[in-house]
Every structure is written in C-alpha cells, then in structure tokens.
Image (cartoon, rainbow over all chains, first blue to last red):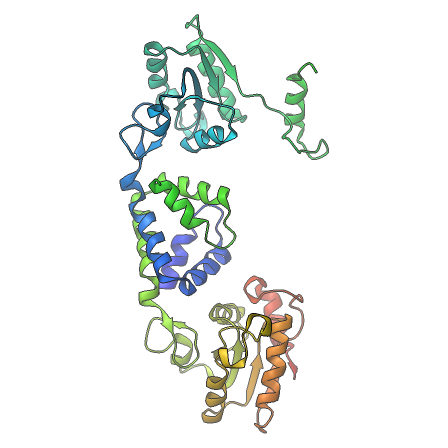
Length: 196
Length: 196
C-alpha cells in the first residue's frame, strides 16, 4: 500500500467522506504547501493531548476548567443542558445565552444500550444541588432520544422546587418554507404556537 | 488561540470546507480514537516526503518511477495526455485503457498566465520523439482551457507523420472535471475517442 492509498483509507473514515472525496482531498494535499501539511498533521496528532473534558461541565477545555465555567461574567443562575460538547458552541454563538452549560455526552437510547447511567446525569444533579441555579434549559436535540432524555430529566429534577425547567422551542426554522417542512416539525410548531 | 481553533483554521483551508464543516470535523476528531488521529496526522505530515512526481510521466510516485511507467504489461505504443496526476487514476480505473500516461500539470490558460512553457509539453515532445508511440490520446478536460491545450498539442504533434492523435469522445459533460465523472461515462468516452 502506497502513502497515498494509506491516506485515502484514513480520510475515508471521516464523516461524510466517500472514496472520491477522499482521493480528491489526498491529491489536493500532495500539491499543497508542505508547511500547511505539517501544521495540519501536527494539529490532528496532538489534538487530544491538548484538549480534555472540563471536570465541571463536560465541555472541551485546554485549561483546568473550560472558558465557560471560568468566565466570571456568565450568569451562574442559568444552566443549559446539551447532548454534545459542540452544542455549547452553537448555543454560545447564537448570542442570546449567557449562562453555564452541562454536557450529557449523548442522549438516552435504550436500543444502543445508552441509559441514564452512561450519561453525565449524576454530575448534573450534583451541580444543581450544590449550585444556585434558578433555571435549567434542557437543550437536547428534538429527536426521539433527545425528547426521552428531556422527559427523564424533568422527572429527575422535579423535586427541586425553586428550579424552573424549560426546553428549547422547536418548530419551523427561520427562512424555512412550509412546503418543505416535515409533518412532525409542523405538528410541533403548531402545538407550540405563541400569541402574536 | 486554542488547539481546537487552530485546527478549525487549518481545516477551513481545505477545498469545500466552510466554518461549520471544519468545526464539525474538528469536534469529530476530538472524540475519535487517538491512534486514528496519530495515523492520519502522520500520513498528512509525511505525505510529500514519500511522494514525488515521476520523472518520466509526471504522475505521482513513491519509487524512482511511477507504477504505470514501471509496468511492463502496459502498451508502450499508446500515450494518454492528461492535465493532472489524479486524472491518470480516473482513467486507469475505467478499465479500458492499458497504455502509458503523460501529465501536463495543468492546461493552457492565458488569463492566469499559464502558457505552453509552464506545462510539461517539451517533455511530451521529447518522449514522443524518443518513444515508439502509435497513438496519443489527448484527455485534457472538456473545458475551454482543456480544448485550447488539445488544439495546441494537435498543431505541435502534427509533424509526427506516423502518429495518430485522438481526443476523448464527448459524453463527459461540457464544463465537467475528469475527477468527478463516473467510470461508465469515462469508459464510453475512452472507447468512442475521435481523431483530432
């Protein structure tokens, strides 16, 4: 196996990368600047040595704790619960949320053997017990697994009397077209309609 | 800048990779097997140390000469002229061509300052003078630049009286790229190649 075949084989394992795209990318890399390839190769190889989960929220971090947990300006009474570390970035970039995060590391999925014990749910309960949160926003994905997880969390957290539990609204995306929206989304945006 | 930001910045420079795809890919790499990341990083970093252009045909090679030029079973009377090294792969994989290759390293494009002198055209003429080719198949892309290059080569090679010049048949969509054509289309355009 040549160096090129080896690279194509590795690239093909990336998400959304087929044989043709991988081959095309490999040829692109042969013809590109050597310094760039060295930097990219190094960045990929050393990534996991530099980045680890934040012990508090489970988000990716390079320091002892992540930039969100370390940020004194963030609202310590708001907690947003997400499935994956990258979800924190999407929410932070939306610009309307300034609280803390908690990463579950997935969603409840009995078929794949992922129960509440496989997720960072005990850590969530501990944080809420010790913290001063007034609202917990459950921002799991609007999928079967995400909804199941949200329901489970609602049950688990209902004993906290002074805690408001909310869930991200789901509906037609901004700029979307009624004709292209699937029935489930449309049904949910109908049920969750708000007063104008 | 964190290791993650640095990786996203590098990934964004890859063809067809925007901010979102790069971020998604970076997060995928954090969560993936460390051995895989090491192998991929190493493969990218060392790629250009292992691979260099074949001194005969200009195709990428790991040995002194490339597998095509080194293959005794290939028809030494047939020469297929392509723009880029990866085009040789597309044609070899179509399964209907068993001759040699010549990589020009691009196509004539006066607007971008690429004239015949910037391409491996002198090397092509030398090979034809010294070799025993009976047919030269011009397999440049069916674009304006590729067609210009084909016409230029027809003029240049017309003094070789015993040489048949052919061009890949249409069937490849105009404005297309050899790297994206499916094997069947490519095979058909190879079989139906026409005399220039």
